[in-house]
Image (cartoon, rainbow, N blue to C red):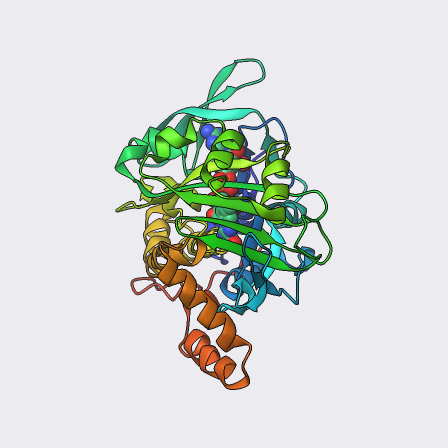
Length: 425
Ligand SMILES: Cc1cc2nc3c(=O)[nH]c(=O)nc-3n(C[C@H](O)[C@H](O)[C@H](O)COP(=O)(O)OP(=O)(O)OC[C@H]3O[C@@H](n4cnc5c(N)ncnc54)[C@H](O)[C@@H]3O)c2cc1C
């Protein structure tokens, strides 16, 4: 039976089906938002089940505005409202320092799975989810898309038609590869390796709820503390050969990179735990740059379209904003999906370009290049503990409007005379 959705008294449209590929933050949020806009989303995920755990993430004000509109925010809480950060070294000489919590946009400290769980919770019960399923071909024509889906559990394939396909399948997106071209055309490497994992208990030198940074030229350990959860760790280092490094065994490689002088207690505990971490992330750092994020009725959202990198700290926020604005654009242009996608892309571009720029400029904050940058960090830490120094730093950090604090919503369409379309189910 075809359900009918009314956008106004005069427009009656059959309910349309959207395939959403990928069940990360972006895919879950997009499926929920499309359902709210009157679409019938079908969500597919390569894995056999939902992901659990994950690494630390910051959710900035801009992302929280979107999470609120998406109905996700009530299922989230800041896991570290105090968020104190310490600058330390191998000899455990620690001092209070500025941390991520001090950045504009008062970030909430969370696990990636917190946002995925919240988006899952907010999803209507009747959204169809298919695990162990991937797209193997995507053929778009003027008014729809034929997608061949493979069931990885039994190898079967079948072709289905959708009115829209959303690729939310991450930085190495297969939708992007199938429709837009090979990864090499769009990925820009930053030249780092990262290893991120959840730590059980606390390493020596790190108290519950405290975060720490142990930075050395071209390598770093960041420990992200929570007040109600074990911390997560991120080890990273710079390399000229990211692809070659990615193929190596991480635990061994990390020991080689960090073991040229005595480790000290914290690094020693973290490297030991890294060897047994249950589901670590071992990856390169890449930004995705594309001239267009949609072709016909296929659109990429989230890391698949623009991966801003962990250095920006805005990937989750960007995915939520992208999902929310996409839903608004489809509501605004109920009869013209092409126009909706163009309007969505125009709205998103400036924000995403800003986030990508933050990713470029903040990389040295995560992994300093030299001793001068480390010395500067000590000066900033010292200043931040002085009454007037703190005022100066506060002005520097929070003086101007920052895209991390800015709400992103769809502006009125210049060519549209539709006005606001209220959904009457
Ligand atoms: C260490 C680290 C720290 C970070 N810190 C922050 C932070 O502080 N703040 C922040 O906002 N962001 C942060 N990010 C970035 C953020 O995690 C990502 O931008 C965000 O999770 C991307 O979500 P996504 O849903 O677009 O993609 P993903 O999370 O990559 O999800 C893609 C989904 O698609 C599935 N999939 C892949 N291929 C297929 C296929 N062919 N078919 C079906 N399904 C498929 C995957 O299994 C996965 O479930 C960090 C990232 C890292 C690595």
